[in-house]
Image 1 (cartoon, protein in one colour):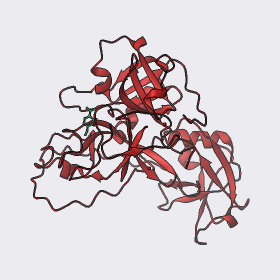
Image 2 (spheres, rainbow, N blue to C red; image 1 turned 135 degrees about the vertical axis):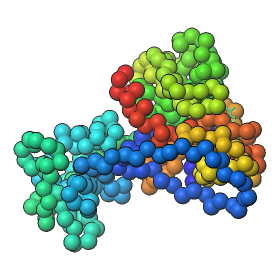
Image 3 (cartoon, rainbow, N blue to C red; image 1 turned 120 degrees about the vertical axis):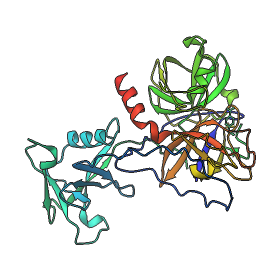
Image 4 (cartoon, rainbow, N blue to C red; image 1 turned 120 degrees about the horizontal axis):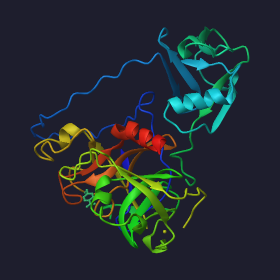
Length: 367
Ligand code: 4AZ
C-alpha cells in the first residue's frame, strides 16, 4: 500500500528517505489484481541488467546492524566493531547514497538475535589496496561487538494516516510535505529532500515557466494553506526540471528545487492536509486497455482503486506517495497525472521515484 499525503484542499512539510536502490530495493505488495479481461500493452521497455558489485553493504532495518557481502562469500556478514571509526561509517553511508552518517556504535553480540553459526567480517587495520581485499572472514569478533549504523533520520516522523476520499492529517504526520506557491497561490505539492532541496513534478514548474524565479516560494511545516504567509516561504535559487521531461506525455515528470536559504528542521506543529491510503497497482494492469492503454512509461507507476474511492486530484501534483517500512517512510511516487480524480478504472499516475535516484543524487551533488 502506498500512502498519499497530498494537498488538495491544503498542503505540506518535511524529510524524505532516498532509498539506495542497489542494496535495499523498495518493495511493496501489489494489490491483488481483480480479474479483468484487458489486453496488455505491448510496449514494455527492456530492463538494463546491473553489474555485480565486489563489495556490497546493507543495513538491517530492524536493528541497524551493518552487513557486508564480499564477492567471494555468498553470505551477508555482520561486521566486527574492532578498529571501527566514523570515517568508515561515513564512507559506507555515502556508498549507499546517503549524504552523511547520523549514528554509529558497537552492539554487543549478546544483545542481538542471530543463529549461532553466523560468520563475521572484519576490516584490516591498514586500509591499503583494494577495498574488497581489506575484508576478512572471522568466526567471532574479539570485541564481542558488531557495527550498527544509521545513515539518515530521513523518513521518520516526529509524531506518532484535493485528495478524494482522504482524511485530515494531524500536524507532524507527514513532515516532508511541502507546498509550492506562485505569488500567494498554491500550485503544487512537493517533498523535502534535504535542507536545501525539494522535489516536485516537472509539469508544475513547466506550466508557469515564464514566471520569475523570485515569485516562487516553498512552504513547509504546515497542514493548512491558511497558515501560509505569502512572503514567509523559502525562496528558490534554482529550478531543475529533469532534462528528459516531456510536456506531451508527462514522462520524466520530476523537478528539483534548490532553496536559497536552507530549511530549519524543528519539531513543527502548526491544521487541513489530507492523506489517503491507496494500493499500488501493477503497471501491466494500469497499462491495459481498460485503464491507460499503454500510456505509462517506466518512469511512471499507478496507485488507486479500480472502483475509484480515493485519489490525488488537482493541486496535489508534485506531492508525495510514500510507503512505510517499519517506522521509516520511503518516497515512492510524485503525483503526476490521471484521468479525472477517483474515476473507476483510472487510478492516479505517479512519477516513479526509484527511476530517478541517480539523477537526484547527481544533481544534488553537482550543485
Ligand atoms: C492535477 O491536475 C491532477 N487523479 C493530479 C492527479 C490526478 C489528476 C489530476 C490523478 O494536478
